[in-house]
Image 1 (cartoon, rainbow, N blue to C red):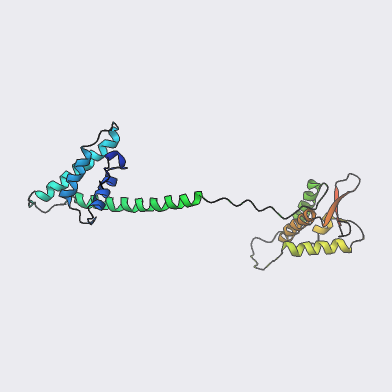
Image 2 (cartoon, rainbow, N blue to C red):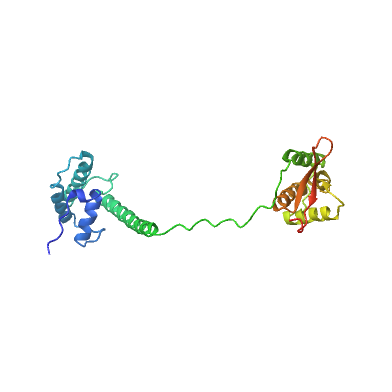
Length: 242
C-alpha cells in the first residue's frame, strides 16, 4: 500500500512538519539526526505552491535554521578565545519541539473531551418547591421606619473599649420568638413593639429578617393602624385560617 503523501499545507506550521518527520523516522526528539531530517524537510518545502507569504515564510525560516545547524555539525569546530557563547540553535529547536508536542497532546485531549461533551444533554432546571403563602400588601416604608426608629435608639458601644462577647442570633430563633409574642397577644401587635424587645443592633437586624420571613411564609400578616394609617402592626395567622 502506498504511503499517504502529505503536502506542506497539511501541516499547521514548520514545527508540526518537523515533529511529523521525527515521528515518521522514529528518532529521539532529544537526539535528532539533523542531516537526514533537514534533507527531508527541504523536500517538503520545495513543494510549496501556496500564495500565503506569511505561512510559507515560516517554513523557509525553519529550513534556514536547519541548514545552519547542519552546517555547524559538518564543518570543523574552530577554537575561539573564551567569551560568552551563544546558545546552541539545536538546543533551542529541541526545546521548541518538546513544548509544541506537549501542547499538541493537551489539545488532542481537550478535543476528545469537547467531543464527548457535545453528546451530553443539559439537565433541566429543578423547579423550586417553595410556594409563597403571603397574600396582600406590605407597607415597606412603615416597616422600615419602625426598624430605623429602634435602630437609632439602641446605644452604640464605646469605641475606646473593646468587649469581646459572643452574640448568636439565628433567624429561626427570632422567628420563634416573634411568633410567641404574636400568639400570646390579644390582638395585633405593633411592629415597633416587636423590634423594641431587641437588646442589640445585631439582634434587631436578625429580628427584622425574621419578620420578613414570617410574612413571606404566611405565618403572620400586616395591618395598618392609626389615624393616618402609617402605623403597622403584625397579626399571627393560625393554620385554620390558612
